[in-house]
Length: 457
Image (tube, rainbow, N blue to C red):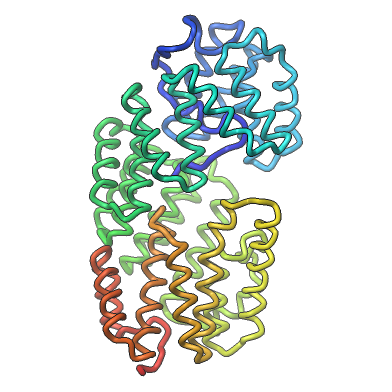
């Protein structure tokens, strides 16, 4: 599972509680009047380090019951409320934390409050400088090294992120989540052997945690090692049945293996697990419906779902949107196809205006791929080739979903090149895809080198 970056404390709490801080004043790591509250907070940190988010909430709520003025517990719980959609409560808790007399807090806590203040005031350009200044004074504080590494990772600066995560492991070998991040950084860049080493090391150090098995499973999906992927993800769920993202990954790999019954079983297991969240029910149900229809090329049936609740307007470049767009293009419903593209374009423009580069990077490849499909199926192969190439340039192997999207987009490009008569370029690209995932290339060859059904040039 890839780590996602949150608002206030932003990953600082992902740490084993026993780590010592070399360059900071001695004493308790966090400011609280209650020893029991501190113990609950440390349990929350351990759970966060494992990405056991459901467990984190309970420990944080207990810490605040024991000490209602525990600033860092309040900050961390505010993040969870924000992610749950309760922005009003999150803001109230953040405001309370920011009103704290910072003189009584430790340097790290003062820094985190100042950083949160910068977020609230949208002084995003100040955050990097603040982090650098703090690390100049306390270079061996692993909490803030993790913050700096996460900042680099989130803005796509893999070189800096890799360096900082490596440094983090040098000073705090128990900070095992760094292995996860290094695995995804190298996976993103196509350095698959190194990614496997990081994920395998992570699993070796923390075999009783779900995330190492899930992350390794994601890598195996991209590499076409589907049985190994399924086994690894199943192990994650045996360890932690509420490790929700793993159900999504398990459905994906079983679908790729052609095991529709197994994919359905994964969905049922998720929905019958204790405290299954509503969003998972919706996500997996939509995934199952669209996976099956796409595999059978039921374009008319897919097109009828264009008003479905599975097509959330807030995420116009989702898998379901892309499949409906492809169906519209196959059926010659060009106005619908272009309208779907325009919806993505509007979100991209909003992201540009608001400076949300992360959103821009996540949506752009879907938009370009949509264009490529419409252009290819309408006969403009030259423009389609450019669109698929541009989509490929924006796509990485960042996780199993995006990694498989990158590979399939490349197969669409191969088919377009063949239709244009550029056989040499097509087979060169096909060899590159085969080097990553030979299974999907074998399936592509069995289909006659056709994903869209274009005529050969």
